Amino acid sequence: MNDNQTTISELRRLVTEFVAQRRWEKYHDAKNLSMAVAIEAAELMEHFQWARSEELDELLADPDLRARVTDEVADIACFTLALAITLDIDLAAAIEQKMRKNALKYPAEQFQGHYYKPTDQQ
Image (cartoon, rainbow, N blue to C red; front, side, top):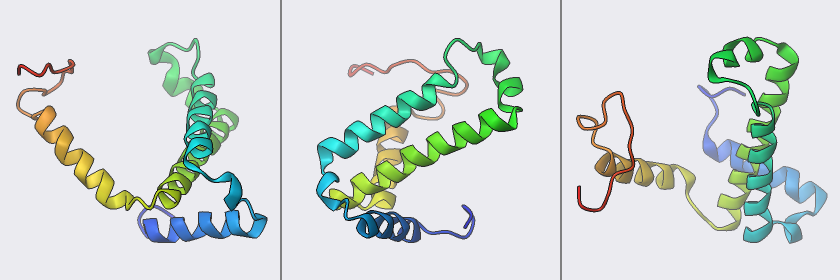
């Protein structure tokens, strides 16, 4: 599997089968899965805690650290997919809709090369 050839549908099937084979459906409610996403995100952040931004390339050149970071990103993605499955959210449609909202909130010509939190008055 790789990003260029694998569909979200295939990933959803992979996660669904994994959960079903272990009979974990009873644990996969919105509360538990949203907490799992947050916990895994915190575990990802731990790998970068106290590192300065300019040190990141060197840190990620370490194959062991890169493998641990990759595992955490995969955990976040798996739990996010499981949450989408549980809540019957079409992830592709949700991402597309969110990017459209973001495009309106952060017009490219206004936010070229910088970021600030827009206010409702803008």
